[in-house]
Image 1 (cartoon, rainbow, N blue to C red):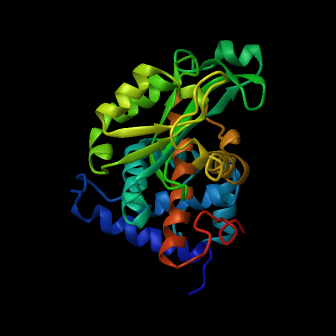
Image 2: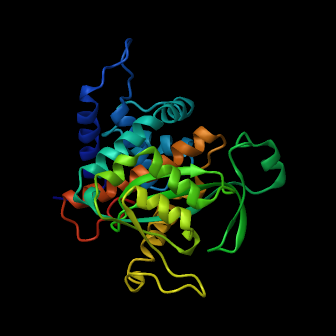
Length: 298
């Protein structure tokens, strides 16, 4: 089987269409661009690195008419995509659950900045006020204005759950809230191990995870006694960084172009869906590296 972007999009279209089979359609005339086609368009846009929606739709009209007979105008595409955020979240979960990675009992958690503006006038005029704020990125030794993406994934890079939060919030509180919202995720995986960095050190956080049946594995702080299993961290500590690099380096997360919270949220979800779809398709086609996007970025 040829592993390329066309085969991924066709397989994804069938999966989304099957998933929507039990959902009642709203009354009225059906849209010329179906929900499955809309999400496939969004995935292809992220895969091919188009950060401008207008340029992307011009490319589709010129080169991808064989896959999309009807191509909306940019305002309609943007409006439909923002309205599709709940459906995108549903499909991310559906694809993840359709792989063997979903039942993995090892999770990796980390956060990464999602910058939404740089200049002071942009910050003052932005519609993100009240959501975004200033935060500090230790890995890059810089301040930024925007949000933080919190991602919990398996060692293969398959997303389990994710959230966007104000960068001033304590990352331990955000992860604890994510687990509180969906307690069944941990309940379905006895003996779950969560790998995180030193910043997740706190007695209350250990107790919170223990209530969900989760054991935290993190490096010991300076002056702290070595923690059980710390010697196992070296092979996996860079995995979450490589997942973030996939989102930023290959799927252009930092060039999302969102100007409102809904716009930023759906563009982040678009990138996570693209990565999830690639892992899902690589897994089902027997590819040796499941998080590789090389076959789909051209």
